[in-house]
Image: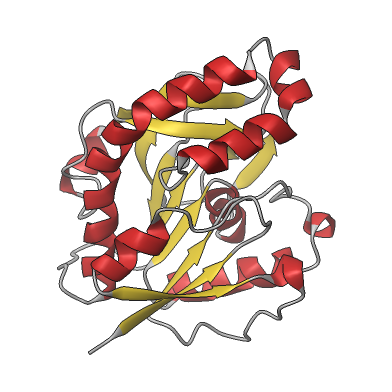
Length: 245
């Protein structure tokens, strides 16, 4: 039996990246929809899972893109129906907003480049985060931050600058503030596009990119198995004993 995930992207510069390889290898094909490129979002998720990627829009401002309101509705419905959901960066922020949390401009400025996050105690029993190391490295590239998690959300990973780095709502809906799917060329494009903003934050784009490239092998070592566990969740092979939303 084949399994499929609906993937919503928000910009040409933030594609599914390595997920386009990792998920099909794990038995899940991707149906990518590009509302920024004129495609219409479906009225409901007919696939086996929903994945929402990053982008430059603001999760708290539906006017920043005409499809954001419907994206949040799709995420809300999918999460409440117990469908596997994964939101990455903007996608994680949209999941937080959709389920009653809050996102605001980051009070301490942007978080950029290869950074460590800290696994929380609640992650030990989580089917996806249980095997993640205590302090994995990720790629950060965001100006907004999740300032309040949805009620009953479980915090799975935290950061020193912005605490709400990864969370779960209900049994199968996951939000990540960070990127795990970004190959070197994707981050290089961000560094070029955001050169002035990166320098305004006191960082050198080339140095930031170099550190990300150095971290990519470790990121794949940790997060590809994470995505494989998400694929097992999609295939119904992961037993969950967690409360429904």
